[in-house]
Length: 443
Image 1 (cartoon, rainbow, N blue to C red):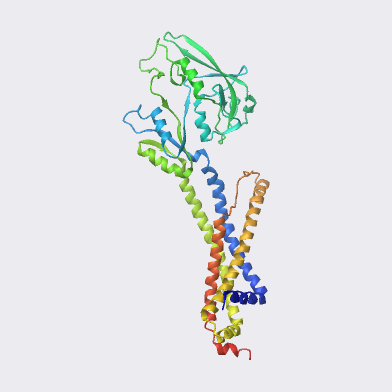
Image 2 (cartoon, rainbow, N blue to C red; image 1 turned 60 degrees about the horizontal axis):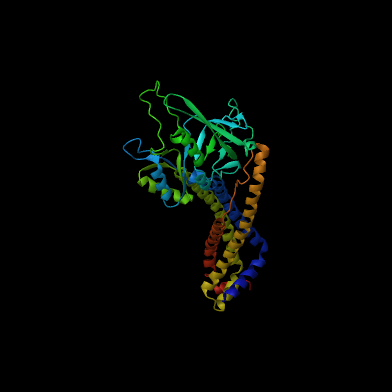
């Protein structure tokens, strides 16, 4: 028999028992849909919780704490170390944050600001790393700065209190007043003017505040030119100075950097970069190392949910087995006729396997469509339910359920395999039907 003839025979017989076929396909569709929806919860939570973080600087960053050395000075990160770290393959940029080593008086339009610190950063590197701003932009000129989100907050206010909007200061002039002592203890002050162009992002932790002023390398050079020391450090007057107190590093001394971060160009390169720099003796840490454990948890959850969903498909296979067994019994005469005219047993087996596979595929297709509808409904309706009953707002891009294409294809493949296995025994039974008994059955 040709395949087209076999397909036509299967289609005609499926039309004869529409009710039974409908119930079998429905059971298969429910099992397949249940499998996809359950597994999609694991995929959705991982995508919302983990994958969202993966693209964030927090995961692509590698914190550098120092380098292995015999003394404390050589353990610190210097210019040569920064150059080396930038040369490592797949490193997007290297950032650092160093505090100005004195209390800088900050005023904006004549109003004193409660700035906690003045921090030097490389804005070109920070732009590549993804410096987060709540308003404004990053500096493009030497006399431009960025201020912290909480810089206008009163020192007596609670950390949880929302501070006055710092973005109101964007475009305003800011004055930074520093000082230096000479050998006789005489203090000299100097004011550096700049323009506020951006405001940092709101700290994610309630107890944390950001009231710093971030300055670039050009403004740092002006401050260091005035103090004649690194990072604007103040000298200690000679009178009454303790002999154990060291002089701050001068501009000609080797420069050391703090809070150094290596930013990878992708989370998949973080491990390789970390291993490479560790071989060179650098002390480092990345949250990506801890993220492996989180991914393992989600993997176990997805496997567990998928296993439960597969059980539903296996339960549906009982219906397919029952349907195919009854089909063999009801079509015994047709099988006898096919055998009488010379049909090969493999052709008869193929007919019933084709019918069971069609049931499985039809149920898988319907189940997949239903799963996508349910997934969309969950993502749309569950945030509304949570907000209504729990008074908690879910992030707009949070997805409780996500169905990647390979999940739908895997579910369809499982349904097809289960359908073929369910129909294999009835198909084998069909090849053993006795011709004479089948032909005189209705006589």
